[in-house]
Amino acid sequence: MKEIIIVEGMTCHHCVMAVRRAIEQLPGVKEVFVDLATGRVEVTGEEALDRESIRRSVEDEGYRVVS
Image 1 (cartoon, one colour):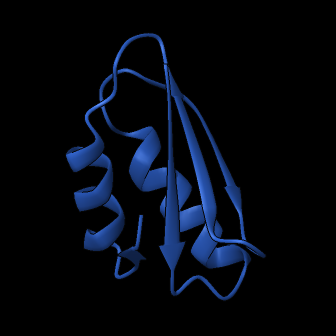
Image 2 (cartoon, rainbow, N blue to C red):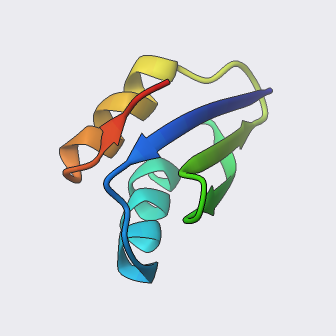
């Protein structure tokens, strides 16, 4: 399964790594791809992913999920 979100507030490689690490810690997450230029984050898991948990983990790092 794949979830795609758009994140605002990332400005550098450190931001990308923080978002990636936060999401990778969630249960069921297999792979995370973060595109700094567009804010697009693709999360792949072996089964359905909890979109709300993904949003909370990103926002706990100080970034904003806009979709």
